[in-house]
Length: 591
Picture: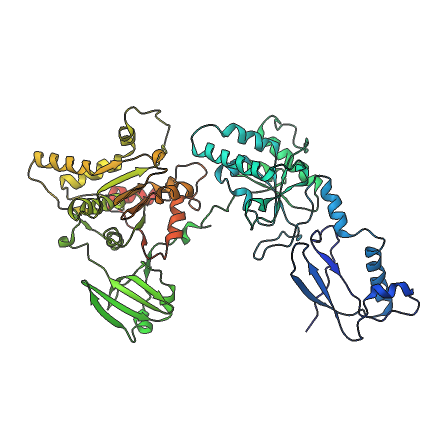
């Protein structure tokens, strides 16, 4: 077995700040070596190898690596003299690192890297320069760079100060960042030496935080106006690149144009991806799995079945069962069709439960029946009292809002499972903002609730053509329809997101519409309002995000779909086929 080789990179690149190497030679000393060196040689018997002990100053963990013995006394002598010089009269690597850090500049090396992190090409931790929009987007972004260092330009702090006033989400994030920075700094007056990022309990952040403590100006094209904040930050990045030639300096910004300018000026620039749940939205959990054609050949042996509460259960065993998620829908269309929901998963054994067929008129919900397979899956989740959280994704016209309202009205007015329906959505305009709206909270929210009014008209008027389902509910006359509409409106409350914090909803049916425009933090705030007996339904289309700096991968709707999958009291379905009209379906495909 070949023995590992010693590193051959220079000491300025090796990560030796927190590592001390003690090498003990294994060869006998020649007679001409001075006697006083014998105590430093650490003799080993001939033919054996000496271990290298690598130790962090704050840790008692040792890593042992076997080093082959020197091939000749001359090599052993040179190795011994180098070791003796480093211990007796030379300047040690750790002392050099301490001296370099005392100058107030980020050192070129960092502590031992965490397992699973991505080191740079040179093995040196990176220095990330943060733009203001990254901190405003994610206040905890300071602690998301693992073993790498973070640098904050003075202009970033200045822009944070401008954004801290107000009651918006951006202002709250700016104040949170300022509080975190104030706690990290504390009584430390030597900011040029850097601050440990794990000072607030973030153990995964092993790097250091550096502030711009002096004027820094890099060489930029003369036609770039230096009075602009973005260009000043680019100048800081260029200055850091010149100061740390052996270290990778990376600008992190959510501003696409700023990243383009940085790359045009030969600077490394990256987007902030830590808040992305998925890199590709096509990998998002759909809640539906089509079984392969050979499913029954591999899983049909030893099937157990029983009935309970009008539902047939099947216990299957096979290799595909381990891939199932609880409350995931599976279907097989063939000689032995199967439409079921996964109830239990235990290794290669799973329990499936048959579904209620809401495509049949006798099982209509408030006069609404399902038109396709995915709508039937969604209706089973909406009508299941054991499912506390439901998320529905789909393009426009797939029937998300209509089915959710129909299921809510049936469980509020017919079965009395919930006391009322609460509907909310984020108020992000598609075009220009129309300004302030008069009236009470509900009156201000009504212009944003056009979808609610449209679907209530469909449910109340008993039309045969509806957005995603068939309605058979009818009333005798205009007076009857008006009375029914008044009853429905009395059980539906429209609330604003701005007043949700601190509330608790008991036995409510909470609908969050247009959830793709919510951040993960806002989504957490809403879902944690649910008290005992409350059901939360999130609706949205991640292809129609209007909130700035939110993408399909960082949307709050994507966040909850990924986090809640597999929980026994949550379910998700991605609706595939539009049912609003042939015009809407064709427009969704070609436009």
